[in-house]
Each structure stands twice: as C-alpha cells, then as structure tokens.
Picture 1 (cartoon, helix red, strand yellow):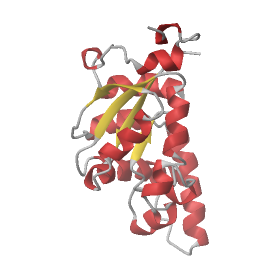
Picture 2 (cartoon, one colour):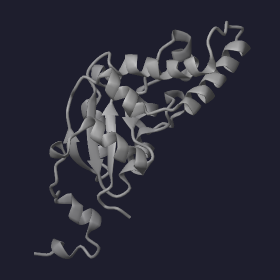
Picture 3 (spheres, one colour):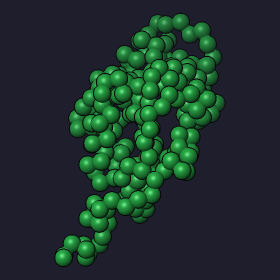
Picture 4 (cartoon, helix red, strand yellow):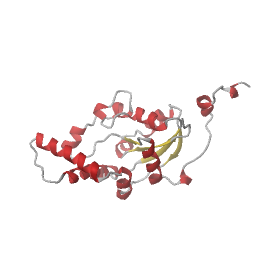
Length: 198
C-alpha cells in the first residue's frame, strides 16, 4: 500500500456557486487524508480537453449510445456517432469554464479509492445517500440530456490511480504540491502508536 498516494479532486462551478467548498473539504479531511495542494482558478478549454483525454474509440462508443437513445425517443439523428461523442466533452468544457473551479490534491493510503467512495457515482440520481453527490445534488443524465448540457455533479475525482498521475500535472506544478507532516498521521500510520506515551 502507498501511504502517500495522491489524487486530484476538482470542485466544479456548481459546487463553488452553491457554497459547498468548505463542506466538501471537511468531508474529505475527516477521512484522515492530507490536503497537499489547493487553489481557485478558471479552467481553460485546452486544459479541459487534455484533462478529459478521450480518444476516437470513446467518442464513437458514446456517440453510438446517444444515437440509439435519440432514435428510441423519436428524435432526429443528424450527426455521425463521433460528433455526438465529442458533444459530451464539449458540454463538459462549456460547464467547467462557466465559473471558477477549485482543484486540490489529497494524499494518503488509497486516496483515489477513498475519495471515489465519498464522492459517489457519476450520476447524482444513482449516487447513494451519504456520498457528496447523493447528498448535495439531484441532477440526472436524463435531465442534463433534455437540457443539452453537462450533468451538474459537483466534483471531479481521479479514477484510477493512473488517471490521477496524468491529471495532477495539468492543474499543479511540483512547487505547488506541499510536503509536510500532520500530527494525525501518527494515529493513522504508526503501527504500534509508540509516540503516544509521555
């Protein structure tokens, strides 16, 4: 296990606008993970296209699903599958550049998995109660599709670990990532709790 595994979390414009920055940080911090980088910024289109990092195979697969959904709903299909797939990212980019975002890096044992569990399923409607998405938003793929916009699900979190390693440098320089020790790390990682007696 890697006690210093790092993961990227981005509070999206809807989380910022709804005043959920502190609450989200509190919930993650309560697990024992350590916050090692944080800022508020405006994301750029280029940064987001690189962040989402989808290839033509992904665009086509998602686009084919969109075409089937449109046909089932009796809607017009007027584009190739790849363009419908790219529309998903286009809508995400439009959403993510609509206002400030708060990227941050969290560190600790299985940070990627811990935060994924806290954040919940991508679609808020199917996120369990007790997760950030399940507790704080009621959006759904269906409503987002009807409105022709990205789903407003408050938080991006890296998954899997390889994505975290690729995404972190898109948002932070090495100098912006702090290395320090929390007193709480002793209770989390010291096997024998040797340092507790005076």
